[in-house]
Length: 326
Image (cartoon, rainbow, N blue to C red; front, side, top):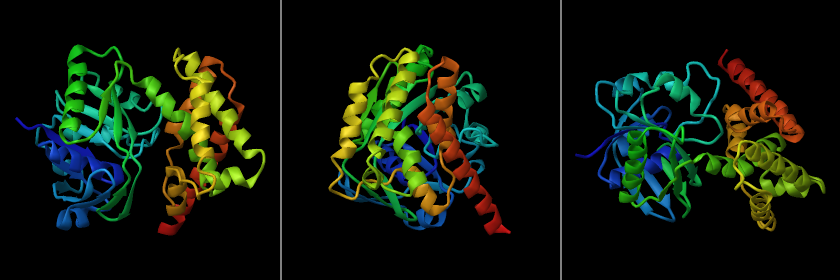
């Protein structure tokens, strides 16, 4: 029997997985907010170096409540991880989480799973690290490159065997749709690996209103600042027991950014949020990391300064959004 999959957040990332899961034969419904009308009338149009120029039309709803009354095998959370927001995303999803629903988090950040574990202690919570550069050019129109893969594991890593089976079945479903998914017994080190890139570049580029290349070119000290923050991330991960997260990996990631210097560079998601006046994933990417460092007694002065500044910027933007509504 084809699984029923609800996708919460059908932006650039969510739309791609609408397509992949539809190709896998799943019954897919997407919760669309800003792009509901376009998705309802025309579906999703994807211009991809991996999949080609494709279109997919699935069932769409405006709200989670509209999707209630059906048994969902998987609920994919593809929205931003806005830790500390009220109501929490876990609370918003309550109408669609049944006794056997697996909650799949396709989101950035560290310690993003806790609100779901607290709300649904018996349900499988599947934590996913996403590598998928994609942009929604207009409502329902998405551009992506040739990279798409998921790193998947249960949360916590010692979850019951039935939860492990749900994670494995999810990977099989992605592969059936010609997507790429790797199952890990413990996926948290993979989150820290991605954080080596996200924690410095996202907030620094947002604060500077610059691409990564423009940031490095702005001053002789810029690259050293990025490197120092990367080393702080490595130290925090090591304090948690993730010895595989090391300075060699950090140097590799910094080298990738340096290799882009002849070009314009890339715009991380927080920079895109700043340009559009949207809330940023400050707590998920930076705040939670700073709190873990404090708890473990790991000095992180660079990351702490970045957090303070980015948090203030995010709240300033929130005030501006309120003023525009008045």
